[in-house]
Length: 320
Image (cartoon, rainbow, N blue to C red):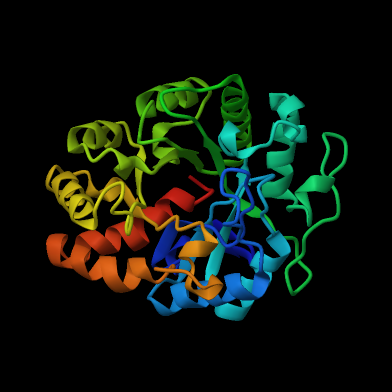
């Protein structure tokens, strides 16, 4: 089963899936780029739905402005299936005074487990190791539950804060089977992350390495895929870092080396200045309307459909 904000569904009904976007996000790393308006985020979700996607992962974890109640309303209004996220992002996203900086792995695990099994809170700020806060509910009154775990690390560095998060993610995974997304900086320390998680009981085929495409090295990616890890490609429309042409070439090379079935696709646009509904560009529809036609021309419909449908359904299936 796949756990969406509106309830559990059969993986066969998930449909084309964007593995990484944000409907809400507030972080000190992006001042002035907050995603915090339900009407505008809902309009952007409708653009994503209109571009050919049936589902998305809302990749905003605990403590950085997620809004489970609003996400459930947006999902119901747009028909876009949404898998919500629990976990804790890399350390730089949390201010020095953020309360979770003092939490140990057991406290974090309890929060992550509650989000996955019982439901997420309306307001993360009201949550303490001893209090769950008011529960978020969907329009039908059911609890809004997370369906995937997420952590993050820095550039060639795993801080004590981030290692504690990884330990808690592993504990929650062992109890629930939920997949683990890990934010990487330019795909550094990818093998090290897989090693740490494997030692803690998380098989590499239950892990997705977000932003793997920031290092367009087919050899590295094939080596990660050979371990079973999923490769998150989400760098489209970022020519200051890598052009779409470079990403297309990388994807083609990885597919030619028989690792295309480990790739999942997303946009990770994540900024109000890049959301059409907030007055920016290019918006969440860029992936479906402008990038995917080029990818299909490069590697064919069958390979792309695996990345959009087959692989996300396998990754997000809690029964695995």
